[in-house]
Length: 149
Length: 245
Image (tube, rainbow over the protein chains, first blue to last red):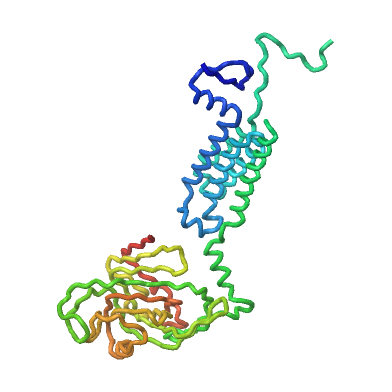
Protein backbone atom coordinates (compact mmCIF):
# COMPACT_ATOMS: atom_id res chain seq x y z
CA UNK A 1 0.00 0.00 0.00
CA UNK A 2 1.24 3.38 -0.92
CA UNK A 3 1.56 5.53 2.19
CA UNK A 4 2.64 9.07 2.68
CA UNK A 5 4.21 10.63 5.71
CA UNK A 6 1.99 12.55 8.09
CA UNK A 7 3.02 15.87 9.51
CA UNK A 8 1.14 15.67 12.77
CA UNK A 9 2.50 15.56 16.27
CA UNK A 10 3.28 11.86 16.03
CA UNK A 11 6.10 12.58 13.65
CA UNK A 12 6.94 11.97 10.04
CA UNK A 13 7.31 8.22 10.42
CA UNK A 14 3.67 7.63 11.29
CA UNK A 15 1.77 6.01 8.46
CA UNK A 16 -1.81 7.09 7.95
CA UNK A 17 -4.56 5.08 6.30
CA UNK A 18 -7.00 6.11 3.60
CA UNK A 19 -7.21 6.44 -0.16
CA UNK A 20 -4.57 8.40 -2.00
CA UNK A 21 -6.88 11.44 -2.34
CA UNK A 22 -7.79 11.39 1.34
CA UNK A 23 -4.18 11.18 2.35
CA UNK A 24 -3.26 13.98 -0.01
CA UNK A 25 -6.03 16.18 1.34
CA UNK A 26 -5.11 15.40 4.92
CA UNK A 27 -1.51 16.34 4.27
CA UNK A 28 -2.63 19.44 2.41
CA UNK A 29 -4.85 20.76 5.16
CA UNK A 30 -2.30 19.99 7.84
CA UNK A 31 0.38 22.05 6.15
CA UNK A 32 -1.62 25.30 5.97
CA UNK A 33 -4.31 27.18 7.96
CA UNK A 34 -7.07 25.31 6.20
CA UNK A 35 -10.04 25.69 8.55
CA UNK A 36 -9.33 29.32 9.34
CA UNK A 37 -9.07 30.12 5.64
CA UNK A 38 -12.30 28.25 5.01
CA UNK A 39 -14.23 30.26 7.61
CA UNK A 40 -12.66 33.47 6.36
CA UNK A 41 -13.70 32.68 2.77
CA UNK A 42 -17.23 31.71 3.82
CA UNK A 43 -17.49 34.97 5.77
CA UNK A 44 -16.40 36.89 2.68
CA UNK A 45 -18.99 35.13 0.52
CA UNK A 46 -21.68 35.95 3.09
CA UNK A 47 -20.66 39.62 3.00
CA UNK A 48 -20.87 39.61 -0.81
CA UNK A 49 -24.20 37.78 -0.71
CA UNK A 50 -25.89 40.21 1.66
CA UNK A 51 -24.64 43.47 0.25
CA UNK A 52 -27.34 45.74 -1.11
CA UNK A 53 -26.34 46.32 -4.69
CA UNK A 54 -26.09 44.21 -7.84
CA UNK A 55 -22.64 44.17 -9.39
CA UNK A 56 -23.64 46.39 -12.32
CA UNK A 57 -24.79 49.11 -9.94
CA UNK A 58 -21.78 48.71 -7.68
CA UNK A 59 -19.44 49.19 -10.64
CA UNK A 60 -20.72 52.75 -11.03
CA UNK A 61 -21.37 53.48 -7.41
CA UNK A 62 -18.23 54.42 -5.50
CA UNK A 63 -17.20 52.84 -2.19
CA UNK A 64 -20.64 52.98 -0.56
CA UNK A 65 -22.06 50.58 -3.11
CA UNK A 66 -18.95 48.53 -3.81
CA UNK A 67 -17.82 47.94 -0.20
CA UNK A 68 -19.56 44.57 -0.07
CA UNK A 69 -17.76 43.33 -3.13
CA UNK A 70 -14.37 44.83 -2.27
CA UNK A 71 -14.27 43.80 1.39
CA UNK A 72 -16.02 40.46 0.89
CA UNK A 73 -13.76 39.79 -2.07
CA UNK A 74 -10.73 40.78 0.01
CA UNK A 75 -11.71 38.24 2.68
CA UNK A 76 -11.99 35.49 0.05
CA UNK A 77 -8.72 36.63 -1.51
CA UNK A 78 -6.85 36.61 1.80
CA UNK A 79 -8.26 33.16 2.53
CA UNK A 80 -6.84 31.96 -0.78
CA UNK A 81 -3.51 33.63 -0.07
CA UNK A 82 -3.40 31.96 3.35
CA UNK A 83 -3.75 28.59 1.64
CA UNK A 84 -1.00 29.17 -0.90
CA UNK A 85 1.29 31.16 1.40
CA UNK A 86 1.12 29.58 4.86
CA UNK A 87 4.44 31.20 5.79
CA UNK A 88 2.60 34.54 5.87
CA UNK A 89 -0.44 33.28 7.74
CA UNK A 90 -0.05 35.84 10.53
CA UNK A 91 -0.02 38.79 8.16
CA UNK A 92 -2.88 37.44 6.05
CA UNK A 93 -4.90 36.57 9.14
CA UNK A 94 -4.64 40.12 10.47
CA UNK A 95 -5.60 41.56 7.07
CA UNK A 96 -8.57 39.18 6.92
CA UNK A 97 -9.72 40.31 10.36
CA UNK A 98 -9.40 43.97 9.34
CA UNK A 99 -11.42 43.35 6.18
CA UNK A 100 -14.12 41.57 8.18
CA UNK A 101 -14.28 44.43 10.69
CA UNK A 102 -14.43 47.02 7.90
CA UNK A 103 -17.23 45.05 6.25
CA UNK A 104 -19.27 45.41 9.44
CA UNK A 105 -19.24 49.17 8.94
CA UNK A 106 -19.18 49.31 5.16
CA UNK A 107 -21.56 46.63 4.00
CA UNK A 108 -24.83 45.88 5.77
CA UNK A 109 -23.20 45.09 9.15
CA UNK A 110 -20.84 42.70 7.42
CA UNK A 111 -23.52 40.46 5.94
CA UNK A 112 -25.88 41.03 8.86
CA UNK A 113 -23.12 40.19 11.35
CA UNK A 114 -22.74 36.61 10.09
CA UNK A 115 -20.05 37.38 7.54
CA UNK A 116 -18.04 39.60 9.88
CA UNK A 117 -18.15 37.09 12.74
CA UNK A 118 -17.11 34.25 10.45
CA UNK A 119 -14.38 36.42 9.01
CA UNK A 120 -13.03 37.50 12.38
CA UNK A 121 -13.06 33.93 13.71
CA UNK A 122 -11.51 32.60 10.50
CA UNK A 123 -8.93 35.38 10.39
CA UNK A 124 -8.00 34.72 14.01
CA UNK A 125 -7.61 31.01 13.24
CA UNK A 126 -5.38 31.86 10.28
CA UNK A 127 -3.38 34.28 12.43
CA UNK A 128 -2.96 31.70 15.19
CA UNK A 129 -2.07 28.82 12.91
CA UNK A 130 1.34 27.24 13.48
CA UNK A 131 3.15 24.21 14.66
CA UNK A 132 1.51 22.22 17.40
CA UNK A 133 3.18 22.16 20.77
CA UNK A 134 4.85 18.80 21.40
CA UNK A 135 2.70 16.63 23.62
CA UNK A 136 4.03 15.62 26.99
CA UNK A 137 4.08 11.97 27.94
CA UNK A 138 1.36 11.07 30.43
CA UNK A 139 2.36 11.67 34.06
CA UNK A 140 5.36 13.81 33.26
CA UNK A 141 5.79 17.25 34.73
CA UNK A 142 7.36 20.24 33.21
CA UNK A 143 10.17 21.40 35.38
CA UNK A 144 10.03 25.09 36.16
CA UNK A 145 12.77 27.13 34.59
CA UNK A 146 15.91 27.29 36.68
CA UNK A 147 14.79 24.52 39.05
CA UNK A 148 17.21 21.96 37.68
CA UNK A 149 19.87 21.17 40.21
CA UNK B 1 10.37 24.82 2.47
CA UNK B 2 12.55 25.59 -0.53
CA UNK B 3 13.77 29.07 -1.36
CA UNK B 4 11.67 29.09 -4.52
CA UNK B 5 8.60 28.18 -2.46
CA UNK B 6 9.26 31.01 -0.04
CA UNK B 7 9.66 33.44 -2.90
CA UNK B 8 6.38 32.37 -4.48
CA UNK B 9 4.57 32.68 -1.19
CA UNK B 10 5.89 36.19 -0.82
CA UNK B 11 4.76 36.97 -4.38
CA UNK B 12 1.26 35.68 -3.70
CA UNK B 13 0.94 37.75 -0.54
CA UNK B 14 2.15 40.88 -2.30
CA UNK B 15 -0.24 40.28 -5.21
CA UNK B 16 -3.16 39.76 -2.82
CA UNK B 17 -2.50 42.92 -0.83
CA UNK B 18 -1.84 44.90 -4.00
CA UNK B 19 -5.13 43.74 -5.51
CA UNK B 20 -7.13 44.90 -2.50
CA UNK B 21 -5.32 48.24 -2.31
CA UNK B 22 -5.88 48.88 -6.02
CA UNK B 23 -9.56 47.94 -5.76
CA UNK B 24 -9.99 50.38 -2.87
CA UNK B 25 -8.22 53.24 -4.61
CA UNK B 26 -9.19 52.81 -8.26
CA UNK B 27 -12.90 51.97 -7.90
CA UNK B 28 -14.83 54.64 -9.83
CA UNK B 29 -16.54 57.47 -7.97
CA UNK B 30 -20.25 57.33 -7.46
CA UNK B 31 -22.49 59.24 -9.93
CA UNK B 32 -23.76 61.24 -6.97
CA UNK B 33 -20.26 62.46 -6.18
CA UNK B 34 -19.58 63.09 -9.86
CA UNK B 35 -22.86 64.97 -10.18
CA UNK B 36 -22.00 67.02 -7.11
CA UNK B 37 -18.66 67.89 -8.68
CA UNK B 38 -20.37 68.74 -11.96
CA UNK B 39 -22.85 70.92 -10.14
CA UNK B 40 -20.17 73.13 -8.71
CA UNK B 41 -21.05 76.17 -10.77
CA UNK B 42 -17.67 77.81 -10.44
CA UNK B 43 -16.45 80.66 -8.28
CA UNK B 44 -19.30 83.05 -7.54
CA UNK B 45 -21.68 80.64 -9.30
CA UNK B 46 -20.75 82.19 -12.64
CA UNK B 47 -22.08 79.17 -14.49
CA UNK B 48 -25.59 79.25 -13.09
CA UNK B 49 -28.33 79.45 -15.70
CA UNK B 50 -30.87 82.26 -15.69
CA UNK B 51 -34.34 81.06 -16.59
CA UNK B 52 -37.73 82.72 -16.56
CA UNK B 53 -40.91 80.72 -16.18
CA UNK B 54 -44.19 81.32 -17.95
CA UNK B 55 -45.45 82.98 -14.77
CA UNK B 56 -42.54 85.41 -14.73
CA UNK B 57 -40.52 83.79 -11.96
CA UNK B 58 -36.77 84.06 -12.49
CA UNK B 59 -34.65 81.08 -11.46
CA UNK B 60 -30.91 80.50 -11.28
CA UNK B 61 -30.45 76.72 -11.26
CA UNK B 62 -27.11 74.96 -11.44
CA UNK B 63 -27.61 72.47 -14.27
CA UNK B 64 -25.61 69.26 -14.53
CA UNK B 65 -26.40 68.33 -18.14
CA UNK B 66 -28.40 65.25 -17.19
CA UNK B 67 -31.44 64.74 -19.38
CA UNK B 68 -34.64 63.31 -17.96
CA UNK B 69 -36.75 61.50 -20.51
CA UNK B 70 -40.44 61.46 -19.70
CA UNK B 71 -42.41 58.97 -21.72
CA UNK B 72 -46.12 58.26 -21.99
CA UNK B 73 -46.64 55.54 -24.61
CA UNK B 74 -49.61 55.83 -26.96
CA UNK B 75 -52.29 53.14 -26.88
CA UNK B 76 -54.38 52.83 -30.03
CA UNK B 77 -58.02 51.96 -29.43
CA UNK B 78 -59.28 52.16 -33.01
CA UNK B 79 -57.76 52.10 -36.48
CA UNK B 80 -60.80 53.39 -38.35
CA UNK B 81 -60.89 57.00 -39.52
CA UNK B 82 -57.88 58.12 -37.60
CA UNK B 83 -55.85 61.18 -38.46
CA UNK B 84 -55.93 64.95 -38.42
CA UNK B 85 -59.36 66.46 -39.18
CA UNK B 86 -61.06 63.22 -38.17
CA UNK B 87 -63.20 63.36 -35.08
CA UNK B 88 -62.83 59.69 -34.38
CA UNK B 89 -60.83 59.22 -31.16
CA UNK B 90 -58.28 56.57 -31.99
CA UNK B 91 -55.99 56.71 -28.98
CA UNK B 92 -56.53 56.47 -25.27
CA UNK B 93 -56.34 59.80 -23.43
CA UNK B 94 -53.58 59.49 -20.86
CA UNK B 95 -52.94 63.01 -19.61
CA UNK B 96 -54.76 66.31 -19.30
CA UNK B 97 -53.87 69.98 -19.23
CA UNK B 98 -55.93 73.15 -19.14
CA UNK B 99 -53.54 75.17 -21.29
CA UNK B 100 -50.26 74.78 -23.13
CA UNK B 101 -47.77 77.22 -24.49
CA UNK B 102 -44.27 77.18 -25.85
CA UNK B 103 -41.42 79.64 -26.07
CA UNK B 104 -38.65 79.04 -28.58
CA UNK B 105 -34.98 80.04 -28.64
CA UNK B 106 -34.20 79.10 -25.08
CA UNK B 107 -30.54 78.85 -24.08
CA UNK B 108 -29.31 76.99 -21.04
CA UNK B 109 -25.98 77.47 -19.33
CA UNK B 110 -24.53 74.39 -17.69
CA UNK B 111 -22.34 74.01 -14.62
CA UNK B 112 -19.27 73.21 -16.72
CA UNK B 113 -19.57 76.57 -18.48
CA UNK B 114 -20.99 75.26 -21.76
CA UNK B 115 -24.27 76.47 -23.20
CA UNK B 116 -26.96 74.83 -25.27
CA UNK B 117 -29.28 76.81 -27.48
CA UNK B 118 -32.24 75.88 -29.65
CA UNK B 119 -34.25 74.59 -26.72
CA UNK B 120 -37.95 75.14 -26.09
CA UNK B 121 -39.78 76.04 -22.93
CA UNK B 122 -43.05 74.13 -22.77
CA UNK B 123 -45.61 75.10 -20.19
CA UNK B 124 -48.39 72.79 -19.10
CA UNK B 125 -51.11 74.29 -16.93
CA UNK B 126 -52.66 71.95 -14.36
CA UNK B 127 -50.68 69.02 -15.75
CA UNK B 128 -52.33 65.76 -14.82
CA UNK B 129 -51.28 62.19 -15.64
CA UNK B 130 -54.22 59.82 -15.85
CA UNK B 131 -52.66 56.50 -16.81
CA UNK B 132 -48.94 56.06 -16.56
CA UNK B 133 -45.66 57.78 -17.25
CA UNK B 134 -42.04 56.74 -17.03
CA UNK B 135 -39.05 58.86 -16.07
CA UNK B 136 -35.49 57.90 -16.91
CA UNK B 137 -32.24 59.85 -16.78
CA UNK B 138 -29.83 59.73 -19.67
CA UNK B 139 -26.81 59.84 -17.38
CA UNK B 140 -27.93 57.25 -14.84
CA UNK B 141 -27.52 53.53 -14.51
CA UNK B 142 -30.39 52.62 -16.80
CA UNK B 143 -33.08 52.63 -14.13
CA UNK B 144 -36.58 53.88 -14.94
CA UNK B 145 -39.18 55.25 -12.58
CA UNK B 146 -42.73 54.35 -13.55
CA UNK B 147 -45.66 56.30 -12.18
CA UNK B 148 -49.05 54.60 -12.46
CA UNK B 149 -51.89 56.51 -10.75
CA UNK B 150 -55.13 54.81 -9.83
CA UNK B 151 -57.16 57.76 -11.07
CA UNK B 152 -54.89 60.67 -11.84
CA UNK B 153 -51.70 62.21 -10.55
CA UNK B 154 -51.53 65.97 -10.52
CA UNK B 155 -48.88 68.57 -9.98
CA UNK B 156 -50.96 70.86 -7.79
CA UNK B 157 -54.72 70.67 -7.62
CA UNK B 158 -57.12 71.26 -10.47
CA UNK B 159 -58.82 74.28 -8.96
CA UNK B 160 -57.85 77.37 -7.05
CA UNK B 161 -54.33 78.52 -7.78
CA UNK B 162 -53.07 77.75 -11.24
CA UNK B 163 -50.11 75.43 -11.30
CA UNK B 164 -47.74 75.69 -14.23
CA UNK B 165 -45.18 73.07 -15.11
CA UNK B 166 -42.37 74.56 -17.15
CA UNK B 167 -40.16 72.17 -19.06
CA UNK B 168 -37.04 73.08 -21.01
CA UNK B 169 -36.87 70.41 -23.72
CA UNK B 170 -34.91 69.64 -26.86
CA UNK B 171 -36.38 70.22 -30.31
CA UNK B 172 -36.85 66.50 -30.96
CA UNK B 173 -39.27 66.09 -28.08
CA UNK B 174 -42.81 65.15 -29.06
CA UNK B 175 -46.30 65.09 -27.62
CA UNK B 176 -49.55 63.66 -28.94
CA UNK B 177 -52.30 66.17 -28.27
CA UNK B 178 -56.04 65.93 -28.82
CA UNK B 179 -58.07 69.11 -29.19
CA UNK B 180 -60.55 70.53 -31.72
CA UNK B 181 -60.28 68.18 -34.68
CA UNK B 182 -56.69 67.24 -34.00
CA UNK B 183 -56.46 63.68 -32.87
CA UNK B 184 -53.40 62.18 -31.27
CA UNK B 185 -52.27 60.85 -34.60
CA UNK B 186 -49.30 63.18 -35.00
CA UNK B 187 -46.11 63.35 -33.01
CA UNK B 188 -46.01 67.09 -32.43
CA UNK B 189 -42.58 68.63 -32.02
CA UNK B 190 -42.18 71.97 -30.24
CA UNK B 191 -41.43 73.69 -33.56
CA UNK B 192 -44.76 72.50 -34.98
CA UNK B 193 -47.41 75.18 -35.55
CA UNK B 194 -49.95 73.06 -33.72
CA UNK B 195 -48.49 74.37 -30.46
CA UNK B 196 -49.55 77.90 -31.39
CA UNK B 197 -53.03 76.72 -32.23
CA UNK B 198 -53.23 74.82 -29.00
CA UNK B 199 -52.09 77.89 -27.08
CA UNK B 200 -54.92 79.87 -28.61
CA UNK B 201 -57.76 77.39 -28.67
CA UNK B 202 -57.39 75.31 -25.52
CA UNK B 203 -59.40 77.22 -22.97
CA UNK B 204 -60.81 74.71 -20.51
CA UNK B 205 -59.18 71.35 -20.91
CA UNK B 206 -57.47 69.15 -23.44
CA UNK B 207 -56.21 65.63 -23.41
CA UNK B 208 -53.07 63.99 -24.63
CA UNK B 209 -52.39 60.41 -25.67
CA UNK B 210 -48.63 60.22 -25.44
CA UNK B 211 -45.42 62.11 -25.02
CA UNK B 212 -41.70 61.66 -25.30
CA UNK B 213 -39.99 64.68 -23.79
CA UNK B 214 -36.25 65.07 -23.39
CA UNK B 215 -36.18 67.41 -20.45
CA UNK B 216 -33.10 69.47 -19.58
CA UNK B 217 -34.78 71.22 -16.67
CA UNK B 218 -38.25 71.21 -15.14
CA UNK B 219 -39.88 73.36 -12.51
CA UNK B 220 -43.40 73.69 -11.16
CA UNK B 221 -44.68 77.08 -10.02
CA UNK B 222 -48.01 78.50 -8.96
CA UNK B 223 -49.81 81.70 -9.83
CA UNK B 224 -49.23 82.83 -6.23
CA UNK B 225 -46.60 85.23 -5.00
CA UNK B 226 -43.14 84.40 -6.34
CA UNK B 227 -44.53 81.23 -7.88
CA UNK B 228 -44.31 79.40 -4.58
CA UNK B 229 -46.30 76.24 -4.05
CA UNK B 230 -47.52 75.90 -0.49
CA UNK B 231 -50.15 74.08 1.48
CA UNK B 232 -52.41 71.88 -0.59
CA UNK B 233 -50.75 72.86 -3.83
CA UNK B 234 -48.20 70.13 -3.82
CA UNK B 235 -47.66 66.97 -5.81
CA UNK B 236 -50.88 65.02 -5.66
CA UNK B 237 -50.44 61.26 -6.13
CA UNK B 238 -53.63 59.46 -5.02
CA UNK B 239 -53.26 55.67 -5.02
CA UNK B 240 -50.30 55.95 -7.30
CA UNK B 241 -47.92 53.09 -7.87
CA UNK B 242 -44.30 54.16 -8.12
CA UNK B 243 -41.86 51.52 -9.32
CA UNK B 244 -38.18 51.59 -10.18
CA UNK B 245 -36.95 49.01 -12.66
